[in-house]
Amino acid sequence: MVYDVSKVSGIGEFSRKNEKERELFFVNEKAFLVVNKNTVEVRCDEKLGKLLREKYESVMESRYFGRGGIEIVMSGQLQENEVDDLVRLSYNLSKD
Image (tube, rainbow, N blue to C red; front, side):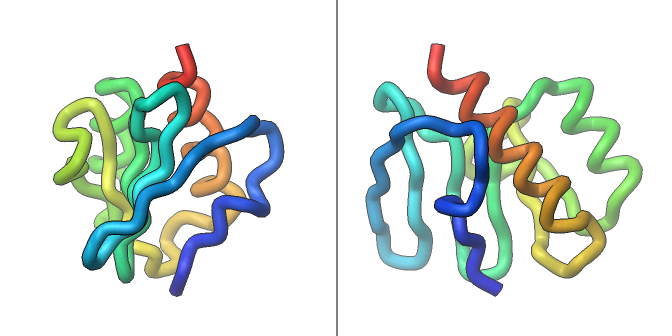
């Protein structure tokens, strides 16, 4: 599954950079989203990240953001609108 960030409402302008096997999305030169083949990585608060990792098998610590983010396997465990909310949160955390 390929994640389509253009359908997420409530985020402003961003830039993107393609790397070998992933696409990075930036706001104010800070990454807020990493789209891999089967996962997406977003920036989030440590407490929220811990809660989501405990609740869902498909959520783990982000390889790109480390403790400051989560990586979500797009398996359907989280609904698409929930992933959109996390992308929006990550955008807002990164824009300032």
